[in-house]
Amino acid sequence: MFQENGSANCLNRVTTSTEDGAFQKKGHCARVLSPEEAEKLAKDQVLVSEFKQLKLEKEAQKNWDLFYKRNSTNFFKDRHWTTREFQELKACREFADQKLTILEAGCGVGNCLFPLLEEDLNIFAYACDFSPRAVEYVKKNALYSTERCKVFQCDLTKDDLLDNIPADSVDVVTLIFVLSAIHPDKMHLVLRNIYKVLKPGKCVLFRDYGLYDHAMLRFKSGSKLGENFYVRQDGTRSYFFTEEFLSQLFKAEGYEQVVSEYVQRETVNRKEDLRVPRVFLQSKFQKPFSET
Image (cartoon, rainbow, N blue to C red; front, side, top):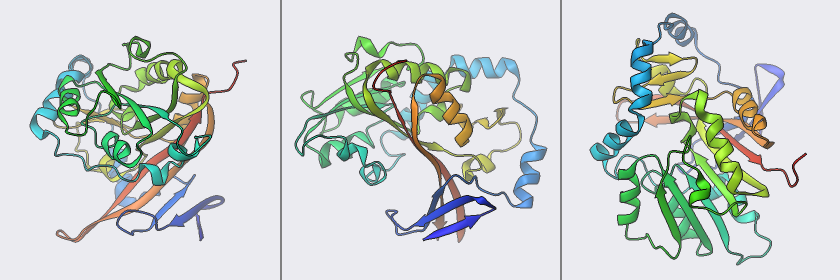
């Protein structure tokens, strides 16, 4: 089923393949704000001071470590939807039982990693995270095995992945709700780092917060760091992507775009009788077979 949104050139397709059976739309149309939402964002133009922004950048790792200290492994739900949304996790094999080498860049406490390892016994995973505490939680998980997984602490903006992963050795990289936590000026460094370990012809699978997601509209005045970039009360930061920005970011580092589209859906809070609009950007970018 298809649905028009806004203009004749803007087409979203509607699917029902979410884990709770809810409708979601996928396409190239950004979410349209209500007049009240547009007014709120228009008024919120005051940026956090440069001094505080520098402090947040300096203390980024500490703030994420404290986040995991407070929440342990209980904050994020396990992500059982990755193989549904990203067929490459299965389709990139040349034969059924082929061993697949993946890198989960920004693994957190393993909410994506362990469901993948449970579902597919022919995966070997490299996994890294900014937070030393998160890495320790992964190592303590009963499902963690050094025969199937190598986890290590890594600042993707400056620590060379080649110190832990051979060049051109990874079949798939997952970059899921990770890049948004990094300063926009440093995002290209992450993509450059990943490029070195990804096999030619293979993909980065990306999913993260999209423009006008409900989380973006909830920030109070005094939380804005820059365009589409905000700080939470705990000091962790979040960027909200447009399709255009993300495409330019990847292409500048040599990747080719396979697909990039917004995923729009409503989350229903029955307890509070609220319908919350969620917007994500879901994309696939390929490392070329040969560099020109």
